[in-house]
Length: 95
Image 1 (cartoon, rainbow, N blue to C red):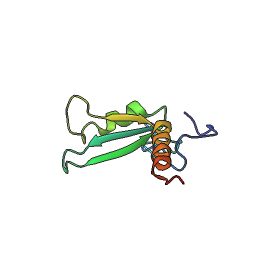
Image 2 (cartoon, one colour):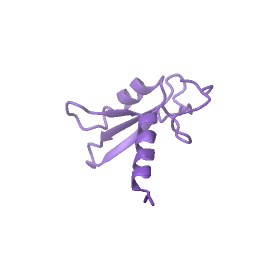
Image 3 (cartoon, rainbow, N blue to C red):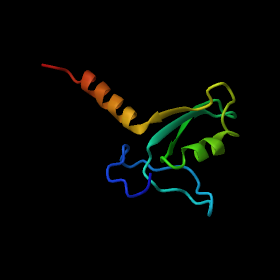
Image 4 (cartoon, one colour):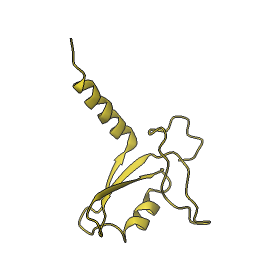
Protein backbone atom coordinates (compact mmCIF):
# COMPACT_ATOMS: atom_id res chain seq x y z
CA UNK A 1 0.00 0.00 0.00
CA UNK A 2 1.10 3.52 -0.58
CA UNK A 3 0.04 6.85 0.79
CA UNK A 4 -2.08 7.27 -2.32
CA UNK A 5 -4.71 4.96 -0.82
CA UNK A 6 -7.84 7.10 -0.60
CA UNK A 7 -9.80 5.22 2.06
CA UNK A 8 -7.45 3.55 4.54
CA UNK A 9 -9.19 0.84 6.60
CA UNK A 10 -8.00 2.32 9.90
CA UNK A 11 -8.32 6.11 9.88
CA UNK A 12 -5.61 7.71 11.99
CA UNK A 13 -3.51 4.53 12.24
CA UNK A 14 -0.16 4.37 10.46
CA UNK A 15 2.52 1.75 9.85
CA UNK A 16 4.99 1.14 12.71
CA UNK A 17 7.64 -0.53 10.52
CA UNK A 18 11.02 1.01 9.82
CA UNK A 19 11.98 1.67 6.22
CA UNK A 20 15.07 -0.29 5.27
CA UNK A 21 17.04 2.30 3.32
CA UNK A 22 17.05 5.15 5.82
CA UNK A 23 15.65 3.34 8.90
CA UNK A 24 12.93 5.95 9.26
CA UNK A 25 9.37 5.35 10.31
CA UNK A 26 6.98 4.46 7.49
CA UNK A 27 3.94 6.74 7.53
CA UNK A 28 1.69 4.82 5.14
CA UNK A 29 -1.86 4.01 6.32
CA UNK A 30 -2.16 0.82 8.40
CA UNK A 31 -3.83 -2.17 6.79
CA UNK A 32 -2.81 -4.92 9.26
CA UNK A 33 -3.00 -5.13 13.05
CA UNK A 34 -0.26 -7.37 14.53
CA UNK A 35 -0.63 -8.76 18.08
CA UNK A 36 2.28 -10.37 19.92
CA UNK A 37 3.36 -11.21 23.48
CA UNK A 38 6.40 -9.37 24.81
CA UNK A 39 9.12 -11.73 26.12
CA UNK A 40 10.26 -9.46 28.95
CA UNK A 41 6.96 -8.30 30.39
CA UNK A 42 4.63 -11.08 29.24
CA UNK A 43 1.98 -8.58 28.19
CA UNK A 44 0.16 -8.57 24.89
CA UNK A 45 1.11 -5.70 22.61
CA UNK A 46 0.13 -4.61 19.13
CA UNK A 47 1.66 -2.77 16.18
CA UNK A 48 0.32 -1.57 12.83
CA UNK A 49 1.62 -2.49 9.38
CA UNK A 50 0.94 -1.25 5.88
CA UNK A 51 0.56 -3.73 3.03
CA UNK A 52 4.20 -3.42 1.97
CA UNK A 53 5.83 -3.75 5.40
CA UNK A 54 3.96 -6.58 7.14
CA UNK A 55 6.81 -9.09 6.72
CA UNK A 56 9.43 -6.51 7.71
CA UNK A 57 7.50 -5.65 10.88
CA UNK A 58 7.18 -9.33 11.84
CA UNK A 59 10.92 -9.83 11.23
CA UNK A 60 11.77 -6.77 13.34
CA UNK A 61 9.49 -7.90 16.18
CA UNK A 62 10.71 -11.52 16.27
CA UNK A 63 13.47 -10.86 18.89
CA UNK A 64 10.90 -9.15 21.16
CA UNK A 65 8.11 -11.70 20.75
CA UNK A 66 7.65 -14.78 22.86
CA UNK A 67 8.44 -17.83 20.74
CA UNK A 68 5.63 -20.30 20.22
CA UNK A 69 3.90 -21.84 17.25
CA UNK A 70 1.86 -18.77 16.38
CA UNK A 71 4.08 -15.88 17.41
CA UNK A 72 1.94 -13.21 15.80
CA UNK A 73 -1.79 -12.87 15.36
CA UNK A 74 -2.35 -10.72 12.26
CA UNK A 75 -5.78 -9.24 11.57
CA UNK A 76 -6.88 -6.93 8.77
CA UNK A 77 -7.88 -3.52 10.12
CA UNK A 78 -11.08 -3.58 8.04
CA UNK A 79 -12.25 -6.71 9.92
CA UNK A 80 -11.35 -5.17 13.30
CA UNK A 81 -13.36 -2.02 12.55
CA UNK A 82 -16.32 -4.06 11.25
CA UNK A 83 -16.34 -6.20 14.42
CA UNK A 84 -16.13 -3.09 16.60
CA UNK A 85 -19.11 -1.51 14.83
CA UNK A 86 -21.05 -4.77 15.15
CA UNK A 87 -20.36 -4.89 18.91
CA UNK A 88 -21.42 -1.27 19.30
CA UNK A 89 -24.68 -1.93 17.44
CA UNK A 90 -25.36 -4.97 19.62
CA UNK A 91 -24.79 -2.97 22.82
CA UNK A 92 -27.11 -0.12 21.87
CA UNK A 93 -30.52 -0.52 23.55
CA UNK A 94 -33.36 -1.05 21.12
CA UNK A 95 -36.72 0.52 21.85
